[in-house]
Structures are given as structure tokens and as C-alpha cells.
Amino acid sequence: MNTIPSTLRMPPGFRWGVATAAHQNEGDNHNNQWSAWEQQPGRIHQGQHSGKATDWWNLDVAAADFDRAAELGLNSIRLSVEWSRIEPEPGVFDASTLRQYAEMLRLLRQRGLEPMVTLHHFTDPLWLTEIGGWENPLVEDYFSRFTARVVEALGDQVTLWCTINEPLVYAVVGYLDGRFPPGVKNIRRAMNVLRRMLLAHGRAYRAIHRLQNHAHAGLAHHMRVHLPANPANAADRRAAAMMNQIANRSTLAAITEGKLTPLLGLGQTATHLIDTSDFIGLNYYTTILTTFDPTQPGNLFARTFFDPAAEFSDYDSAGDPYGIVDPAGLYLALKTLASYSKPIYITENGMPGDADDMRGRFIATHLAEAWRAQQEGADVRGYYHWTLVDNFEWVEAWNLKFGLFSLDRETGARTPKPSAAIYAQIAQANGVPARLLETLAPGYLARLEAGN
Image 1 (cartoon, rainbow, N blue to C red):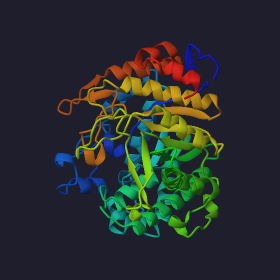
Image 2: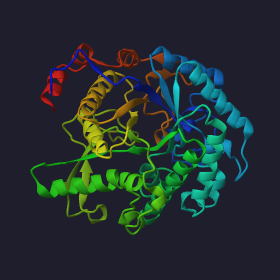
Image 3: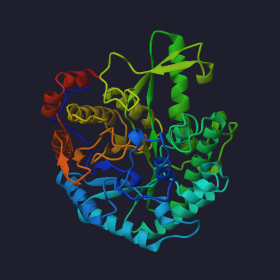
Image 4: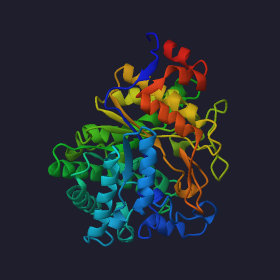
């Protein structure tokens, strides 16, 4: 690589943002399957509830947070709409809720913040859950109808749509691991749900473009990059490649070529899924090591674990690390996505860290790797840090803190963390100042120059 410039600058028009989700921020969502899950003993860390969350359904509170984002120098926010608020009963759409979202979007735009709107971020209306949720063959019709209604109501303020957030995570953690609702542990059902979500994405994509020709639509795809535990071992390399194919490339094959792998539908091609991605949204948090293990037939003879020599982020309530800090993994993920010749938005990237002693460095080094990938041809158009304010983190509740601002749950007060100022410096420079990177991560510039 050539000499590193004084600023690792991103292209003009780059979107600097934060990512959020409705259930984790709005508060008082009582009509979806997650609100029901929170009421069940043992499901959520310490029996906590989302409650008011960060209180964004109060538009005064939301507007104040939008001000904070704008003051950092950000120009975009990724947020989701809550299906159960908009369609509280099947086929019944709440006009007042849609007006509330329209006002929220107006408040964003008023502050120079371009919205990226996610239509499904882990939550389903209770009425859908009661008829089988994403296992119901009619769910594609329901989601397409919901999508069309939202685009009709909000399309004058939104041109960037994310259909579904992390369909693989939704299917695996809810229907295989059983940690998310509905708490199922069945691989056949998990793959059926994933298949239906991908097919529903295709239908939603078509609905968006039918109503809004100029829209850009895609989905947010979680990529946990699998690396061979021993790169010199052919069996480990094959195990890692297999896991990358299943976990990372199968979804991409579906939304670009319409191919549903044997796990998802007997190797068939779904015509309406072909080229249903104007961009690829990448949610990247960590890498993981993969080794061949003949004692693990249920996991296709692959065993995964975090590199014990790596730097770990905070631990979850079970005492397990959330992940390791591996900025180069983002580069590898972006290089993989670049082969699909689509624009890329980093729709989520962040780390849990209550002390906030690592987050500034995490942001700077990950963005340095995004710059490196962009220099090598990856069409990276935006970065959305997860998240703005510490929020309700699903089964971990309030235990894991990802925010640039801390939240006093009693008073609602926000306090900026040191990482907020670092991200602001980067966003306002439209790239990572080399001097800042060297201060936060001594020696990292030399690594970039060496290309590793």
C-alpha cells in the first residue's frame, strides 16, 4: 500500500451514522413477541424489562438524541419501525402510529440526518406469533402487505430501506439455540424460518420498488468471519470455509442469485429473489476461530471458539465473552462482499464496554480497515455505529453497554462517553485522522502501510 495520507478519508457523501432498533429504543412496546418473552421467568438477564427503553416514543426525547447525533457531526441514523405498533391486528393499520413515525423522520431530516429505515428488527406482532410467526406459509404475504403500507406512508421521507435485520441470527438464535423467542431448538424449523425470511425479503424488495422506483433497498446481514484455528492445517481450513459458506455466503447467494442452499430448500432457485439487493448491509462485530473436530457431527465436524490470545470485549451474563476485538476481520468481510459488486453499508459495528476504555480505539481501527478495503475496491458508502445511547440488549437486557452515551435509567439523563468525541472527530473529518489513529493504536499505521 502507498504511504498513508494524513486522513484516511472516505468518499464524498459517505454516511456517518448510528444504528438503533425500535424495541430497544422506543419503550412501552407491549404487543410483540419480545414484550411477551420479557414476562417469562428466566428468559432475560436478572428478569429485567425493556420498559421505557431510551424513551424514543416520546418525540421530545428522540429529538434531543437526534440533536446529540447531529452535534457529533453525523449525517444519518439507522432506525426501525415497530410492526406491532403499525399493524396491531392483522390487516388493521394504525394511522396515528404512522403519523408519529413520519414526524420522527421529519425531525431527523430537520437536523440533516438521513434515515435508513429497517422494516423488521427481531420483533413480530403477537397476532403473527399466535398463528405460527415465520413458520406460517402466509407470512410472506403479511410482510409484503406491511412493507407496502409503510412505504406508502413514509416513502416521501425515506429512500434507503433495510427489509430485514439479520435473518440468520433471528432463525438460529430463536429456533436452534432457543435463547430468543420462541425458544425452539430444532434445525429443521430454524432453516424453514430462514428460508421464509429470505423469500419475504424478496417480496418486500419488489414491493418497495413497485412503489418507489428511486429507492435503495437491501437487508442487514450479520457476518462473523470464521478463521482456521491452524491455517497450516487443511482440515481446519476446510472447516472454516464450510462455516463461512453456511453462515456468511448462503444469505448472499439467496439475495443476489436467488439460490437457496440445500439446507434452505433442496438447492432450488427462487426467481423473485434474484438481484434483490441494491446494497449489502454488513453487521460485523467479531471473528471466530474454527477447527475440524471429529467429535462434533452435530455441528458438521466443526468447533468454534474465540482466540484466547486476543483482546476481549465485555462478557455476557453467562460469563462468556461477547467477542474479540479484531478490526482486520471487518476488512476480510468487506473484501468478501466486494466480490458481489454491490454498494456496502456497514449497518452495525460496535462493542460492549462499560468502562469505555476501548471503544474509541475500536472505532478508529475498524474504520481504518474499512478505508483499506475501500482503497482496494470495496464500495463502502456508510458506517453506522451500534449504538447512540446504551439500550436494552435483548436477553442481556441492560447488562451490555454499546452506546456512545450512557443512560441514567432513573432520570433519562444522557452522558457522553469519551468515545463519542473520538467518533465525532472522525465523522467531521470524513475519515480517520492518521495522527488520531496513531495516538489511539500505536503502530497501526505501520500495519496498514504493510497491508496486514
